[in-house]
Length: 429
Image (tube, rainbow, N blue to C red; front, top):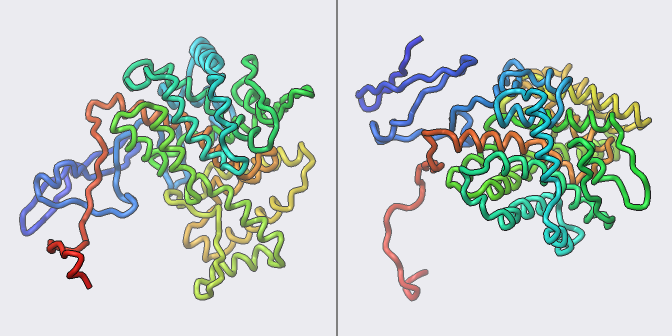
């Protein structure tokens, strides 16, 4: 294969280097394009633009492949824990026994938040969305750790501190929203077991953590831990490129994740299934209305299709199986799951959806599984944020260690008025 691509502008030729990734992905390096030609590229939504080189996650949307640091997501979901997978993402390799013990101990050491911060929860109204609280409280952490202003020092401490405290903040915000007393973390519990304890235990009764719930939560968080250069991860990189502290950088990522087109999509799946349950429509009729673009029915199909995947999302396959296990164990006969499975069956046998490569994505089953675990709908995106945190941290660290790091500064093509004079007030029409 050629090492350069040829660009012809006004009969003048320019050679642009071709970059090939370790999995054969190809890119045309346009770093010097503007300097050499005076042109920039225009790519709305950055659908064809690579913003960085990264050794963290490989995603092949056509083949339905997702790997963290080279390890298939299926293997991690089956055999790993969220803590071990977090170590893998952040440090690049699976930990040995001593490394995992040290990492786990750091997470235990940083599980508490400053007691003053606990009182901040009292200042939020009961109606406050947990994502608003989460982003605010994470940003507030920077005031308690002023040394974080130097982003190149104590990276390990900063990373584990945030990874541990995020679950505590999330659980406290949930308890605040339902008017129940908060539960402090218990450091003898594992990461996921500790979170479930803080979410569901109450001071007046003993609480025993369900190990199947722990396994399901580990799986959910692992499957959400990273997904290449998505909206929130790109936000973390863009915000982090100006060198604010880690807490502020992650707070920006949380805000980007909050949107219904990103982390909020699993909530919209549940709302779609509930709407279908409450109506007289069958899944087949609903999908028929989705296909009918001529009618103004505002019918939307949530949980199908993906910007990157043009095949069945590998994460959805894993969650579909786990959802059945949890519902069966808890004795839940959830009609929403029946509707979801029928909708999937109809869509995957319909040429309209097949030709458009509209397969179920991770949001389609994650919402049902979170619902079965007792996680309220307004906490779904918070759970996504907890899972995505090690991915955000690993991309932030990778960027910090990149000798070619630059502050993010996209260009634009201006389409407004050309130069015109200022018109005094008394002469304006």
